[in-house]
Length: 74
Length: 372
Image 1 (cartoon, one colour):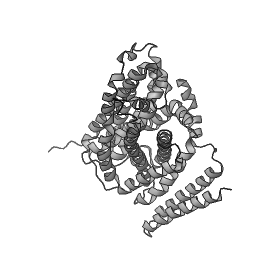
Image 2 (cartoon, one colour; image 1 turned 180 degrees about the vertical axis):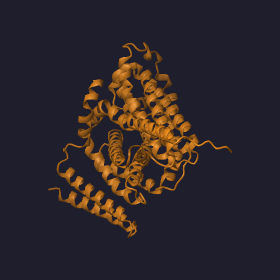
Image 3 (cartoon, chains in turn cyan, red; image 1 turned 90 degrees about the vertical axis):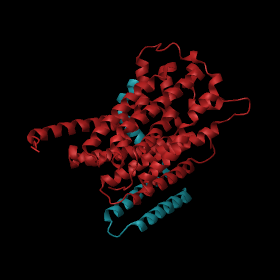
Image 4 (cartoon, helix red, strand yellow; image 1 turned 60 degrees about the vertical axis):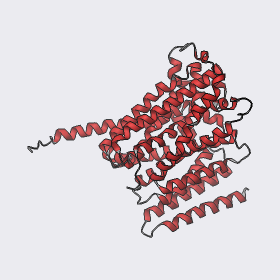
């Protein structure tokens, strides 16, 4: 179940969030929202990659977009 | 302004040199060698034309909007809505490139120096170092490159001298045996690397002496051109047609050095020096990502998002490629189109639109002639 990796990633993400949160002033609402969004995306992506390391990623997306041009070089 | 630091044009040139060269030295000799064989020295010359063109376009755009980066001034050119979408494309590109460079770095270090170290440790250590520099702002980047890049350039002439007795200049003949088409195909990869000079767009607003910006970017590009041509000549003189069959031919060349049975296995030294350049490259792209995001969302400060982005780019690095072969195929076929499309084609379109718009407004309001 890879439970230790899961706990480790969660602790890391939580630490980063805590560390950066303390640097922010109360009136920086936009920064706080971005910070939470970014760490949430990272946490989700990390868990996803932990259980499905072979999942298609940005490389496959870009490759399929530029594949017709790439044939010129073959 | 998100960053109050100021750098000189010279420091910017020192930052751009490893930004192009550090990974070009790994991939380009091998890729060009597969197309053009012994003519691989000519491919960077053709490819560099794109670099000079990109630098010129971005400098022109910078002169029209002096205190802003591309992500900020695009809203004056194509309107706020489209510029947000364009900014998102660029941020994704920077995120992708950070992962790409980190992956390349970790593959290379893993294969050549630390075969048993887990990839995440190699990536994590350099990301933490880079995030420390970025938190310090653009001045720290400038000073770090001033310190590191001269050490990074130095080994090229030294190792060339050490290899002199093994070189055979006849390997380079005959020139252009198979015509021009393979040369054009071979210059596709170098021109993609040269277009990374785009990163001057992020640094030009911070210059103390902006009028020297173009001059120093050209000097930097010329230095990269000279280094790539000389290294391609070196590997061709040494291996001949065999160059393309080695992974990382330049480091294979260093491995061959043997002076009086005393100076041997110098590759560990050159990898250590190479890390300095790769570190500057990672930091520059990471900085562009973090600063670009802060400008895109009009944040007051970019420092709080440095570490979260560090985590994200490490994850992207793990996600992007499963093995070196996959990354090599991508660099060969997709990279030469994706990177120049983002870094050369889109800014050129922006410049054309901006020129047309300013001309139209000039027609509407004829410039007032002052009578002293």
